[in-house]
Length: 172
Image 1 (cartoon, rainbow, N blue to C red):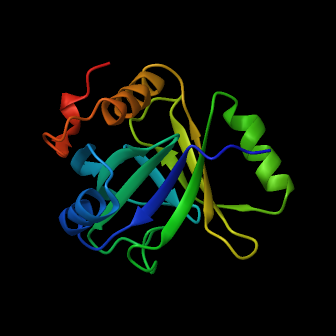
Image 2 (cartoon, one colour):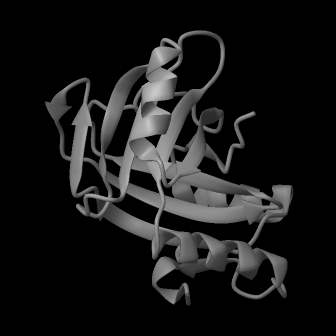
């Protein structure tokens, strides 16, 4: 059985979404990267410039990702209803194997690249072949795994202060 590590939501306004998730849903803290340009990104085979702001929080065993796209670049984020589940993510150290398994099940690559430009931090959004959100496969090795553990640890020890934090404050 596949374990999902993350549920992602595309939002129209990251600050509004953060207020909702903190005040109404009760998840905190969130760690925010603002105006982040993906180092390498392709959509339907074409190179694109992708600038997003993204926030990561933790809800028990599952990470919550909130994504706001900046600009009108055609991407996996455009045309999605704001606030609805956009994707479920699988984190893996066996990226090629896991992507091949999803492709063998009929899913196709929609958007892919690397956030940092490092060859061992790849991601791919696989277009759904039926009812349900996209599946994102994320290559996770150290130090990304340490960063994700630090986000989860911050949620477990959250004391009510600073519900929204700059991602540079992640200590791992």
